Length: 384
Image 1 (cartoon, rainbow, N blue to C red):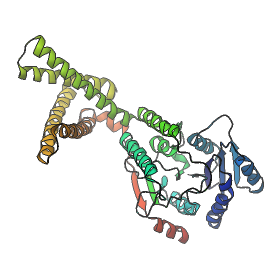
Image 2: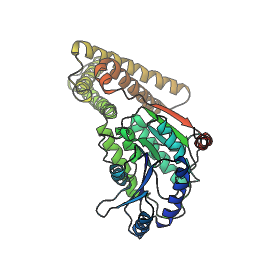
Image 3: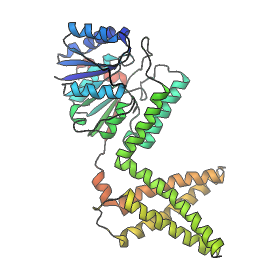
Image 4: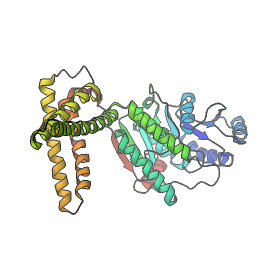
């Protein structure tokens, strides 16, 4: 089997026949062996429509679920049943154009690991979504990209339309919450290349939207769980939390020295900063970068950490002053400086102080390429 399409359905009876007809028109000229797996959670008579089509069309297969629900889990069940060396996931609501399937398939054959039709690259379109839907979509993408480093170069990381080589997910523990299965694949999969093809999202005519407040909540739960399961992302958030604890320690020691021991202001400030740095170092060494593979003791790591922290303080001050010079209030400038210095400090510590650990955990340099919808369709028609 060359290609397997995995299509989750929920009350999509009016879309089934038009979708399958368009899939056949797109793929039959390629002369490849393909199958369509519908994983159905419907509460109406969609399953009857699917069963009837399955009886008449040998490429159509149906798995109807009674005890399990959810778009992402439906895709995982489809992956388990699919036989193709290449897999494509798409919705049944006709918002994902089957006419792009030849282009997706060809890119996979050419060696691309993951192919994502994108609404947000040159030539793409979101289909005229309303302002609220645009805001929700943008917010979901940005939060995902901030939380998970593997999403940051992907323009449409929340897409429900994508293709991948089967070995990308072999051995991956896919256990998604809610509806964003692509994020699960991008975080847990094994791949080196991602190719985005611009496409025009189409407004739905029939069926029920999967967008709901519950699904939005599930999306946030999903991100939190993925961060906890992704060592590089988990380390960054731990680094930030430990940095926050350092601020609390700094203030507590400062108050104790000033009002308990009546120390001089400068002495109290210096001692409080040193105690906070030691607190941060200990927690980062024992929690954030906990490993026996570093092969370095305090004699090397602690001075490096203190030096990087000192430079981070200088960066915070310089950024604050620069912001003040262009009219930004000092508190806001300080916050921007802290954000910049925290990012810099994490980057430096991960590559200098605890560099052996980071070298062992990296190795996922991913090449992201993009293509306009016009070029994709031209290449598909030419068979290139």
